[in-house]
Image 1 (tube, rainbow, N blue to C red):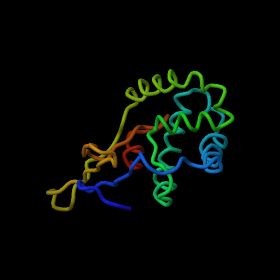
Image 2 (image 1 turned 180 degrees about the horizontal axis):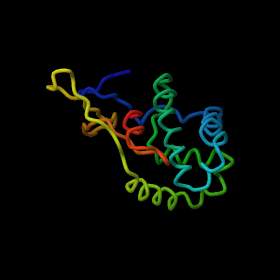
Image 3 (image 1 turned 30 degrees about the vertical axis):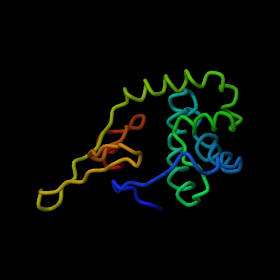
Length: 155
């Protein structure tokens, strides 16, 4: 792992190889095929599952195998739609599905917390690993039927 000047991870999307089919099959099985049926009833839910698969890929596969290419979520989604048999029939509509998901995602409420030290003089801020990411309090999107406080604790 290398550190960029700003202290974040330096992940290059310009080098590395695409994930092998075996890894894509594993991600498809782990995050899509073995979930409750109701999770697959809308493309919004499916793309939230793919988002989790993408985080897993970046945090585990890419982090532990420097030969693998770091992918944007859009590129990862396209690759999964091409390689996962359950998603392949919808590949022609991927641009619209992705656009609709991004519009939907901005409407999903987030919850988080302001975490202070014992002296109330310092607080925890988090920063994404992408170049130019800003700092913010820890927060994340609420899952379906999740209470605010449960989401805040999870995040």
